[in-house]
Image 1 (cartoon, rainbow, N blue to C red):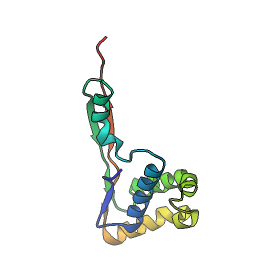
Image 2 (image 1 turned 180 degrees about the vertical axis):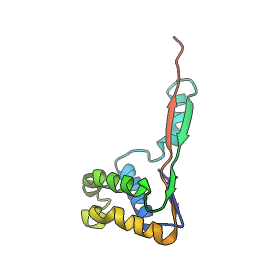
Image 3 (image 1 turned 60 degrees about the vertical axis):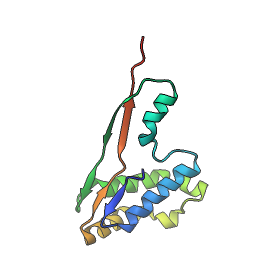
Length: 125
């Protein structure tokens, strides 16, 4: 999750990413579990895993990132409020996508989504 960023910085996007990280931490989850999967497999006594990571970098008016982050924030809103991470008024989810897009276009920013990591291992049979 901490790999998500924008260049030049889009404050709305960064704020959303920071809130998601804070939510994970308050819920007792690891925001960067993808980068910790190798060690988790090894500590669990499994063979060293095969791993792959994928990232998405976008910009422009038609970028999927704005919709994706706004939808993510909408789905997490009940937990944000329950854990004191953000209020519905602060998130203003109904205008979030448009506000993020406007700032990104204003600065010709590229937005990097979190890296998605998969890991798997085969155990001897």
